[in-house]
Length: 220
Ligand code: ADP
Ligand code: MG
Image (cartoon, rainbow, N blue to C red; front, top):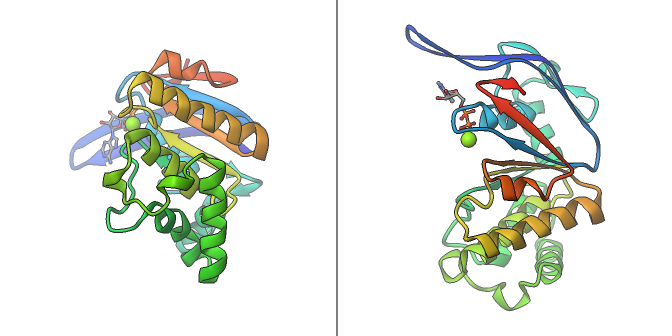
């Protein structure tokens, strides 16, 4: 599903250069649940951004679902991202003025799906995630665990092939974090979605099938 070929990323800030990734080669199988672990600053978020086409590598190729992202222009990259990738973030990133239901339905607005179908699909998914009683609440009326489950539903609503979760339990207590990881596990098993979990928590990483360790920009 995902192939990184000889990837290097160098950030340039005026005179300063930061080598964020160096000669990274990686293959990720369709439907797998892998964790990327490494210290802060080791290049985890950079790796995620490459796969999402949010960043072009200084050298090497990123191939997702058979598509070399280098061959796509900006517009085609956005379309690829909307179709293929779902994101889950540490701080949920749910707009506070929308209810849980509206937040989950939002990506379907951009996909051109009509309102009644949007609401029906969002309601169905929130129900599956045990959130039927919280649908009409706004993010600040939800617990952290509920908010993250809403965010996972939002990431899934467009049926992406890949979920990229960057420290999704970083802002949750242990027990709530476990529920979120179990949900990601279920999503990978039941829907065949490829899940990539970034974490620096060893316990969290045990939920994955494989742990990819990254140290100072290199795979260890
Ligand atoms: P992690 O997610 O593992 O904490 P990052 O991928 O965010 O690591 O960062 C890897 C390295 O690249 C760090 O040294 C970081 O400071 C640097 N870096 C990340 N983003 C930028 C950027 N936009 N400009 C310059 N340096 C950056
Ligand atoms: Mg990071």
